[in-house]
Image (cartoon, rainbow, N blue to C red; front, side, top):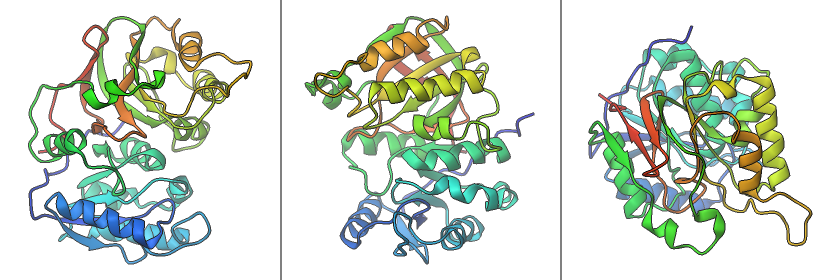
Length: 318
């Protein structure tokens, strides 16, 4: 049985945000830009002790990254926690994460991509609503910034998410929406990066059940056969077929190679997800893109493929 949902306190201008790097390392100039981005949102920053650590493709050792994560949840002066980037490495932390500490000290926790590993595990182990949204290195343009503030600081319900006009202007076919199966559906939001969701299959940190949930997925730079393989793994290892609906973000860079004998990405989605009998849509404005909205993991939401919208039916913060 899943734990009861816990909503963190909303953020306010001037709040102290703990910044951490639980996955990959950042070059100094990228790190400085990320810190500047978060300061411009109106927050004070408390840097994790090890955010400049590097160990190959990791932002330090497991012990260092865990220390920063645990410290930020434990510190009463920190109102929220922002991940500086994704990359790789968050899943390696999960066996040693102190979920009791997190449940005892609920606060806003935000990031995406590799941070999916932490979002899913925290949701399953504690019930805390966390936020699949921009990392520190993201582009905090008007669309991205508006949704961050509206979800984390000025919540309203219901809150309807429209497509980004800037994304629709892009010429690439992967930035256009496509209804795979029409309909309306509602359920609690769960999901994140497809690579992380599929790689968690068979571990204690996978989504325990997709049944009745509003599932969201995104990825980047994966050819269609790899997307097919990851979806197939989820379909065979979980009850994804029983989801209420599936919202797919923008899978930038996921076209087949030129002259490759391949299904298109949309054909892949139609093949793997189009026969489930549930609403499925591709191309909502989230993922590894410049203009993205923030998704609270754990709250009730409604998908409408006719209007191409996702509506949050309750606020994610208190």
